[in-house]
Length: 273
Image (cartoon, rainbow, N blue to C red):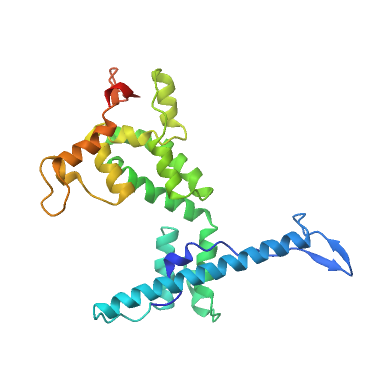
């Protein structure tokens, strides 16, 4: 596998371009008002980040090659430029590349053009939009088929988009969802929270059912599917029915208070845990 591994490249931040000039010993600021020393520091940071991406890519390649060897697998040939460009556009921006961009990329003979196109795509708005849509579908799959949960999509996507824009680590996203305040007493305020930037939709989409929240939390945040143990011991894994419901008990204090509409007030009652 090429060291241009896509997943390592996604860790790469755009190279810092200098915008300064010097006349003799006189320091001249760039167009953005940044001094030469500050630009040099930013450039060094960019170089360090590039080196780190190369190191991570090489380690990923080594582990994959080791797996091939241990399992007697013959890898296919690396993807050609046209195939690579299509894949990277779909993965990062969620769309195929324009014809003009494809022609320019295929004619480019620079050795690092694959990395450069990834850097450029990560700096564009399409990356934020596509990432937001992907994670909303992963965290709230119910909104794809349940019309009653569609109304929570705008607020949740706004919240996700803000975090994608600021490059919030995934563990912080999870913590904010799990720890979001549920002390809602006023219906109008609760509805306003759902429509604004908030992760509250995660609970609304799961119908605030302890078994749904337990299954979704385990699957999405821990990478473990335990819902098969909801009714019986898992047939293919070590999870038992008692363990599933012990985990679900953490969410037993979250309740819905129906008030004559499909928008139910969600509250947490600590004494029910």
